[in-house]
Image 1 (cartoon, rainbow, N blue to C red):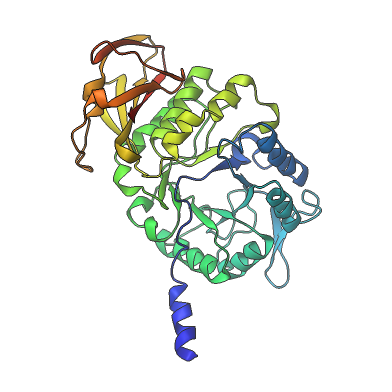
Image 2: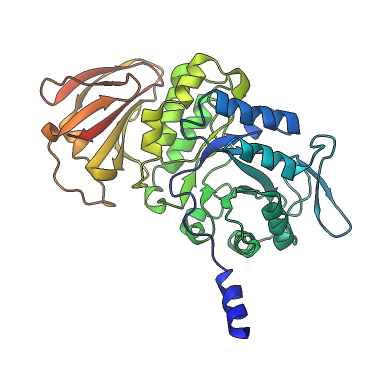
Length: 385
């Protein structure tokens, strides 16, 4: 018995296996609502995710970000804001589960969260048991007010706490990339932020993409680079720019956490977020993050390897002017990096599909002239015949 208990405790220094085999998809409250969250809002978002068809497109997590918690009781138990969440968090989790969705919550590795609410430091095992009891499926764990804490050690403590609590919970490390989590977090969590917070502007979004280009080798099934949540539909970018934003996140095998008001989406926003052909790149079981194959300044080509010898190519016009480019699809098909050695490919063995136009290309030879509006993309999938 002593040996068995010791083994169980030793095994607790592990993360749950089998979670997040593809990048998590869902919705998070922060980008649109910030600290203004409540029970009614979150329930309505769950309803809207189902009614809008986003659930059918693969979105499954409803995640409350900061400001749901207000204090700890005399025993150290975390207390939800009773004015905002009058029925408690378990009630909300049960409601979300009743919709066939999964429930996520937020805390922080520091003593306080970013909005000065109680953090998790010193209460990791207690909080993990509480989250398990409530029915939490996803934990976003921030890095504010962490003082001199070591990131790897702090996040490992919460990993061990989640494992000991016994409920499989996807663990999202929100450390902003300062301690290079891609180098160590594979054994700690399921996804880790690689940059600071996204802002709903073209320049902010594209600067995050630049920081992702050398990180492809660190991602795979169960462990993902996280360039932060989606801004699609929040109004700071054009429809074309949002299509680019969404496409690049899918090429990067990034978690897809919508951050808009799902109750009032316009048609363009809904079409972007529910483009299942582009989402399929993100959710491809092979789990390869895309890479920048060619950088011609304002014009880039990104490549993503897919299962069954498939491939995706994303043409990106970063400039403020329209571009006309000559594309050799045979070259794109054979694009490679030092990370992966691919077998020889023949273009005749593939159908080339435009994933935003939802149609197959009728190629005359290997090349085609393509127009790219400012800040736009073209995304193609090479589908084996």
